[in-house]
Picture (cartoon, rainbow, N blue to C red):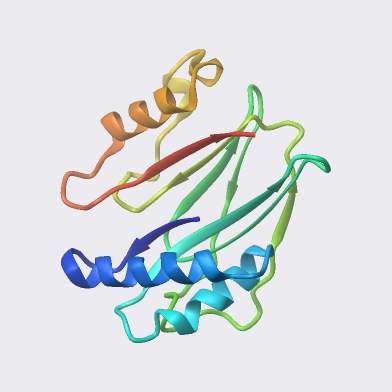
Length: 160
């Protein structure tokens, strides 16, 4: 899960802490059900946006669901795919018709999640051969070159 509390400071941190505690207790393995479980637990906070991904390494499928402006990209040597989240704010208004998106990951080697503190128009082609390196190198490059200096930011890069 990559999540971002709305706004800044202690109130955003309170929303994040409530979401993390709910996530730890959540008995589900469906990303949509996880978000639905977290939603009432953060209702008394200012809320947050989040994307949850569950990887099944045996079937090579990724289940993913998100609410709000967390950008998600699957990246391979040749192909890339952007996954769009649902509109809303966890803790305030999430869609009733959310579903898990199930993606075949055989053609992708990395899952990249970025909060809105990272500009969304980054391109991996700017970094030839970076896909072969440790995921932290790609995360650092995205952070360095595309950070908005006016917002908090998160970048997660996961090898699949």
